[in-house]
Amino acid sequence: MKEKIFINARIIDPSQNMDEKGSLILNDNGKVKAIGKSAKKKDVSPDAEIIDVKGNILIPGLVDMKAFVGEPGYEYKENFRTLSHAALAGGVTSIVTMPNTKPFIDNVSMVDFIIRRGRDKASVNLFPCASITKQSEGKLMTEFGLLSGRGIIGFSDVNKTIQNTELMARIMDYASDIGVLIMQHAEDYELSKNACINDGEIATRLGLEGVSTIAERIIIERDLTLLSEYPCRYHINQISSKQSLEVIKKNKNNGKKFTVGVSINNLSLNENDIGEFKTFLKLSPPLRLEEDRVALVKGIKEGLIDVIVSDHLPEDEESKRLPFAQAATGAIGVETLLPLSLEMFHNESLPINKIIEALTINPAKILKIKKGSLSKGSDGDICIFDLEAPWKVDASKLKSKSKNTAIEGRNLQGKVLMTYLNGQLAFKQ
Image 1 (tube, rainbow, N blue to C red):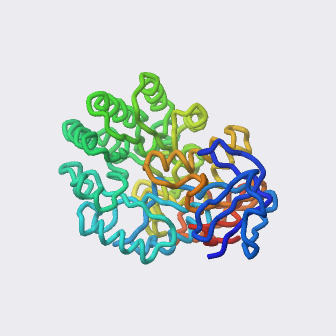
Image 2: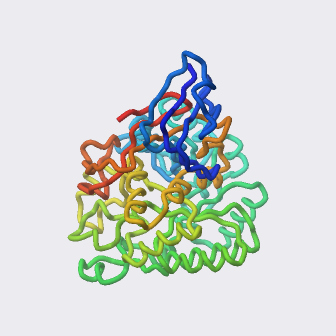
Image 3: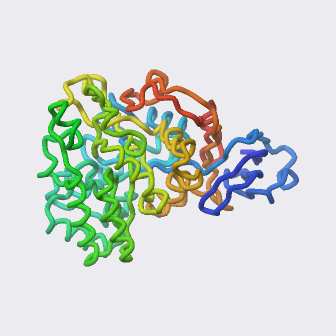
């Protein structure tokens, strides 16, 4: 590999508090050699490749903390190859994959399989999760120590909550002893079973079973109370309500150490978007009120929410073209994660640096991986995008195998132009 220098770039790297016009130099191993105003053409070899960024924005490759891959068992929805293509088209170079495959990732043989298969077929950095409990049934803990020793980055039961408080206490106690990351889906099962939409006026009008924000808040309050006794690495996968933010703010102000994620869907849509039973907007957690959406955006600005995730969940059309109550839950989103996030900059809700921080260095810190940064010596995982380029979401042109986007036909501003992985061009518009 030849040395590369990216010139005429606006470089934004929140890990270094950097937002300046300059250059980026990658050495012949694809590692960052120099960055910013101090990086000059004279610092590279005569045969170095020169990439003119033409004033566009250059950032670290995005780190998506929640995506479903589909392999093994659900290859008809998504696979490593199609997920990689979609991710790279969206500037995402590192993905945390969920364990709800078939069979579940809850034992050593499955971990070895998924890591081998990912290495052979994926063209992005994959960081697999294992389930917290066997089969995500909320009954028997998996072997945290054994599985993390084989390459598991964290533990999650995906869209299922650890309902049993005594079990959750033991999970957090064990996790605090060995230092593993627990990622909880906060939604009380008894309060949310059979529900498929936010509890309120829309649910009543559509005749659908609704779930109150209390179902989310009650699990958060329980787990953060347990955290006082068992201070483990604890992450709330996604929150959806203003009420939950109030609990989070109180606990963070009291000095508790934990992290919080939010889906880009809950930042950009509300329950009114469901209209007349749009099943592609059936999500978990559900879309809430506009005041909840606004509060979540403010939560990022105030540092109460640490990361934005795509919650990429591909479903085949047959699973979505059903009555709302019977339709599958979830939407694809890894390819549109960055452009949709940039809406919050264009409508002046958030500064661009805050958005990039929640998509790069913050998830990397939580996961304890050497990604999300372009500091000297870092891997050359790079996303280059045009902040102003307008485009319209057309599901047929998205690279995911499934086409169940929640934002079909939406006009966006901001488009990924190039993505580099370990210094090699992996996507070009």
